[in-house]
Length: 338
Image (cartoon, rainbow, N blue to C red; front, side):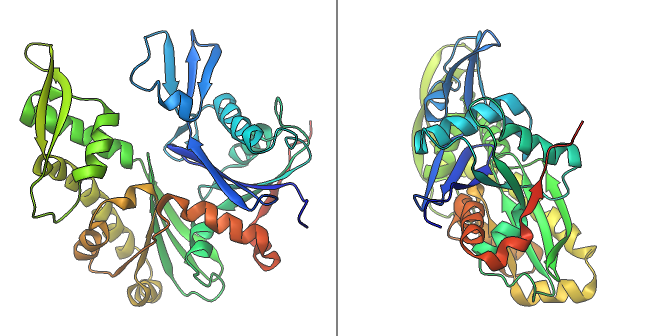
């Protein structure tokens, strides 16, 4: 068992996470690829992220994922084999790979994961896919077969997936094109409006983490450097946490209202089970201070916040790999024969 070549993979829009069964460890890097002149790969992972919003026009730095889905299969493949090669340079062949994926993928989308795991340096690998809500549920110790209704909301970098699990399966799911990066853009817009200053999304993300939150009473200031919207010249200015928090509240309120609408359309028996359990909350963007309290007040349901945040999905896949009784939720994917 110890020497089996097995990997769990969570292809997040912000971070790619790979669990190695042999080393019993999760590895993570930024899911970014830097390409020069549309053809030459310059950097991958953390190295590529260092170039984000700094590179010249002929170098494009972007994630291969969009709204929770694979947007560029070639770049996704580059990102995946780059990290696996760092984990073990001799294990790109003959492995079993468990991919955490959004719910309700088409057969073509499922085969894309097979193609990605068997192209270039990666060859002869078996692919099994796991629905992300199932992986999150396993990580948070939800009894998948016994639950009469559990709601899981995963707020990621570019998307939010709202799902309900009952009787051993995901019975309903919806993906919102709203996540951490859209929150960063809202912060950029608010600072441009209030401070007359243009900043990048990386700066906005740092502000979100350092002084951002919900229900925050204490006002804090952080100095940032941006471009003056009138003169076009660089300028340093102190940005208030109130400005940042006003920007954060709008998209989180949209997510909360979508959850409410989702619950209103859920059968009463299942909604009652969710009311008793509370809404399970996971994803990288749930690190925002008081996000659980904010969503609980908005929806009227209790909220159970996972302390694993963006590691929740990959930890669920890890548990599945280690426990043979959880294997029934991992579906094999085979390439279509011509």
